[in-house]
Length: 537
Image (cartoon, rainbow, N blue to C red; front, top):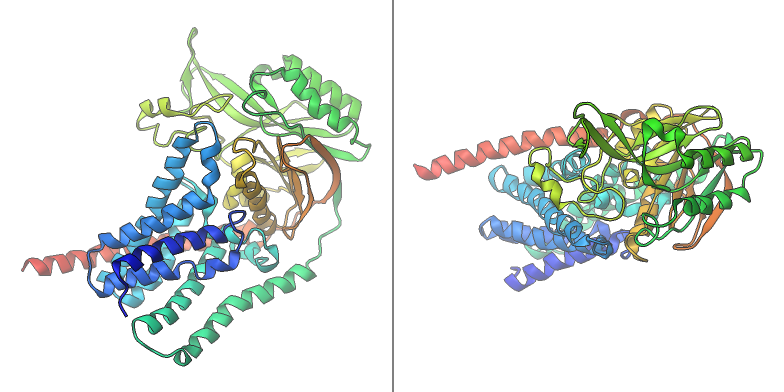
């Protein structure tokens, strides 16, 4: 059987649709991820068998991954200025994914079929690892994230992280493809495929059974503390960055007033709760700080963790985020910060380090400074912001936690490093009101469940417009709020000091596969050059 041109396009679309339907809150049919790659793999093999030009593989892969990006993150377009973000996420990220798939085809073509299919694992996992660490970083739709809504079957992420899930998906897809290939191209009977079905059962169900056993037998150490989480519900477009700041602060402070008890250790407020830029050096002299400090004295015990828009002044440029002062000598850098305020100690600032493309960071603007003019204005400061040199933790009332601002919660290795540095819990402050009532804020909350499993840490989220939540060490959402409503709650969380394998060693799979990625690419290039050289003789 041959796959016609029309069927090749249909199969490419089918793979993109299945990937989208498998992703959380754009279908949440996670089991489809185990077969989603099969139609595209059949297309690739048809092109390979017929010795069509390799560019056809790139085209069909681009159709699949464009649809996956656009389908799973369609909500980006709902943000103000979302067209730029959509171009980066749908078109560019889709092309990068297609390029990786195309590399697998080239290895298969110039090195060998078996080596080619093995290379797909290394190319793809290596790519997902790189995607956490470079200028165009966008790991939101890492394929291992597809299981975030079913923590019962991925407790082993405490060893592998989300990239282990990506590897699992690819292995099962390759086995299903082997069966489909034998049936479609080799004309074998279904009965002959029995050994492959047994192997699929082994690869598919052993991790699930082991995870379910872990899930139902896992016990948390009883080391609880009381926290208060606030959700002031300030409209990010029409109120947060132009309304009365004192009134906004009082909104969440008043929420906390009715919930704080003598046992409360922390009060959490969302990202950019302090929405007017404050100089970190003189922050303690501001009316904003005095207002917060007075309320802390009234509460008599808890520390306050919240977000703020801040800046610092310098005599010389510190990074590409440094800008020259308009009417004075020197430079300044703007930050999206988290701030810890206590009754006695001075405030502590940690700057958001994983920045949103197009809004908080302009890719490659260190090489091409004129790109900064393309930044999206979404309220507050636009253009590339300053970041920390390394992941940091904060400590108050004898408790160390990971301070996470918004998008940082998607970066498993980043948070693992904070837990490795002593974080006993993960506090996420965010503002998810940019995309209306779409899948965006739901996915953001759901992906935080993976961080809880990877590190066996409670995650507490304070989201300006929701969803605010608390997630336990197994990845269960045990407390949640509605979206776009004023809300607040008091609850206990369990601290944990022990380190999982993933906390200790991070993305071992990612680092290892990324190394082999380059070896395979180099070997493929050598084989291609030899083939090309022979053709010239």
